[in-house]
Image (cartoon, rainbow, N blue to C red; front, side, top):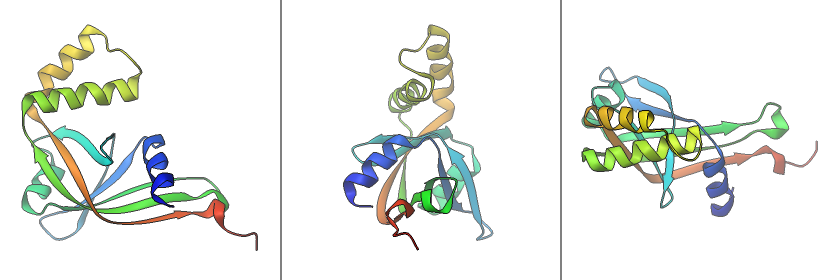
Length: 144
């Protein structure tokens, strides 16, 4: 995928698999909701989560997005990234609101906003800075 195709792909997908390095050296992979801000993937998660502990120890991670059922439909991307953990409650709250708007539709009900605001002090925002990327789009393959 070229940059424009990748940008469109990133915006249309809904879940990113995030692989961090556990303390025993093995991968720890979790599916996450995400937002794209200025071309970067952002998530929010609990500060005490294993993925955050792993990223505090080693900020390197790999993100993977994919779609398609049949071989000739497969598309995806793998990003090698460096994580930056943001702890500002205002930033975390704003990111939580934006995530819920993306996934639950425009406009949040007051009780959802209140829940996000209550959770924000226990959460962090994580910005993933892309270091390298590999992508594929089997729809572009020639028929055998």
